[in-house]
Length: 186
Image (cartoon, rainbow, N blue to C red; front, top):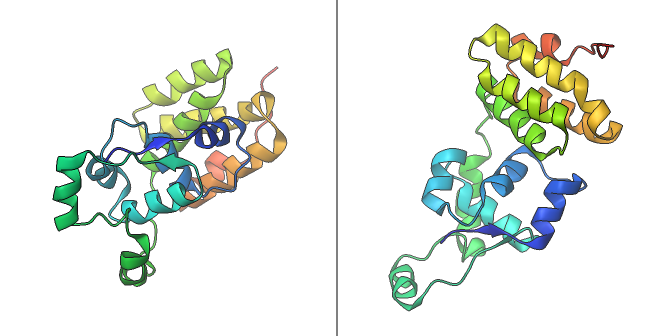
């Protein structure tokens, strides 16, 4: 089963108007019709079936019905995404106490995704800069530079949502360094 975005899913990613949290947005970006649930679980964590089911219920994702041989195999072991009400109550209490970790890698991937969505030559250059940053200090500077240029590429509201999501994933030791407002270079 390989979930892919619906027209609504594509529109939401391009317009940035939906109230998706960071994990939902990341899952929506990664669901390209080529990755299986197992691959997505490896990238996003064990709660992917519930996350995919929620995005599917909201109309952002579509999962094609499996062919006849695959349907028989899944009948023996039904996927949680196809029966969300049956597995959700048992899984949700296990996931609730897990605190999301903060990491530079998550922040870097998020900013790379945001820059990739912008149709702007400056965004393309910043994407290359963030992608090339390997040392922690270089990554902090690249993230700060990208964030300082974002208001020129998109709306103030969208910029604030990006800043808010970065506050969720950046390690606390780097919050001030990255999120401190910096004037745009002239």
